Image (cartoon, rainbow, N blue to C red; front, side, top):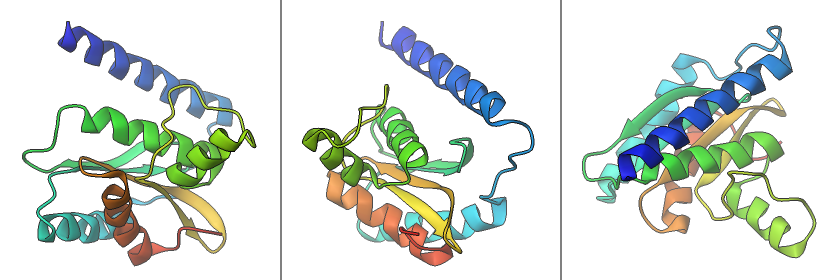
Length: 160
């Protein structure tokens, strides 16, 4: 039952990612390069390991396409799905997943289907432009956000 659920979720996410790319057009290239993602991932993972936090870290481009993923040994099985949901709200809104949650709760913005409303997803801006997201899941939401912020700060900023 659980395996079927994860296959369904993964299929839906892959479909959503594909339709998002098609809707945005082929002329919208990824702004999150592999090299930038590598620098950010190394910093985020080192921080998480230093804290002894077993987490999943996902880096996406501005279209919510995965660029890099690491799941530290011991990270929970559901951390991947939560990281994807955090990255989704970040790339759709340009807000941290925590700020998105606060705005949804206040009624300022509409909820995004499949999104989550807790911390851990952080936008990556360079030169005022959203280039992607770093989303972490596996520990408390505020700790997830710490891990993501470390990576963001090595390659850009979390606000435009």
